[in-house]
Amino acid sequence: MRLTRSLENLIEQLQKLPTIGPKTAQRLALHLLKTPEPQARALAEAIIQARTTVRPCSQCGYLTESDPCVICRDLTRDTTLLCVAEEASDVMAIERSGYRGQYYVINKEFKLMGDRSLEDLDFSALLSKISGGGVRELILALNPDIDGEVLARYIAGLTAPFPVRITRLAHGLPVGGDIEYTDEITLRKAIEGRKEI
Image (cartoon, rainbow, N blue to C red):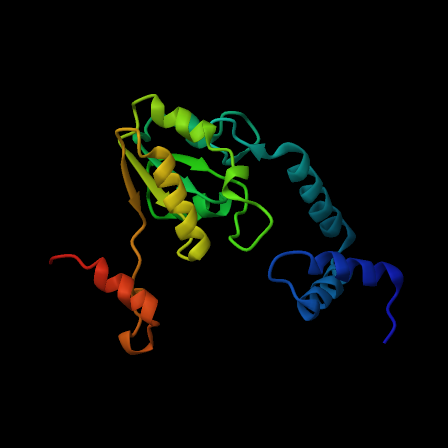
């Protein structure tokens, strides 16, 4: 079936978004065409405005419109805790947990099998924060996959000379999960990270 050039282009652009496949892109495109014009314009303007005004915070790397960001300006946060996250979306998730410390957001993707090496990542701002002496604990909130493990070990090595406790997020069984359906690696991590009750 042939589509108009503009509809085809819209579907192609939507497919470039993460987790959006061809069918979802087509459904979204058709929905957008049915959307009243003021609503469609508001969406387009919101995208353009966010692209032009949102940038990484110069102190922590989280996304902000005013520098420093709202987290760095919050004087009630625990400055002795520093959480290293890969992306701003990780910070959003961690914030929902009630964490009240500071952040360092890498904002650059590292894939072991990719074209970027660990040396391409700039951790000078992180080392500067730690060398100031106020940070007591560095929490590595990195994805629990091979890339996150490599990155965690690399950062731990970089920060080892400083008098700071280095921790990782716990790995293990999800609440409400069944042990019999848990994969071996998750179960091994849960056994290794067990706690006394």
